[in-house]
Length: 159
Ligand code: CA2
Image (cartoon, rainbow, N blue to C red; front, side, top):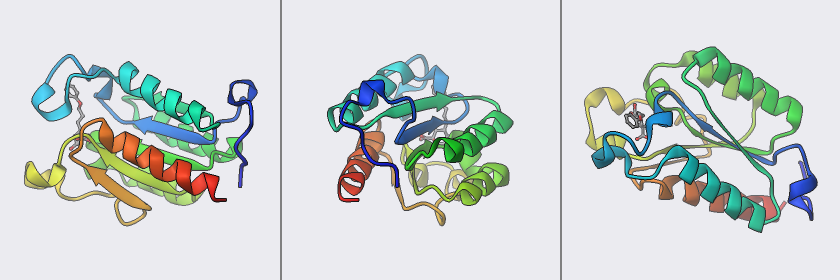
């Protein structure tokens, strides 16, 4: 297990990786009733600050390209990433490729969603990730990411 570093800023390899799927780069510009007013940069910055305060390095990645997400997950294993927080966005409901990548690297992950997918259209009720995830947090806006991060901070501190 990768150990938290005492000086997070000098460590290149992330302990935690936050992955955002397609269209989440548009956060803050449209559909605030579903996804809130914060931008993706706001969310990433807040998560990085919290991780840093806990002595952990957190990296973030957003892509609209499925293959790029698969390759980022593969790279996480080479980097020794300890935990992943992923909002697969629309790929939640479609992507066997990203599911298989997460299964292959075997890095514990939490699936998060800004909206309550179970209160929305039926096609959003199925996830290709939930049965592999350590946990699933949905419907709490950006707090979904923060609660996942707190869980992993506690878990890594106890390692
Ligand atoms: O609630 C979530 O976090 C979702 O993962 C968001 C996805 C959706 O397909 C999932 O069912 C639930 C959609 C992300 C699209 O993000 C946008 C942000 C701003 C404007 C338009 C789309």
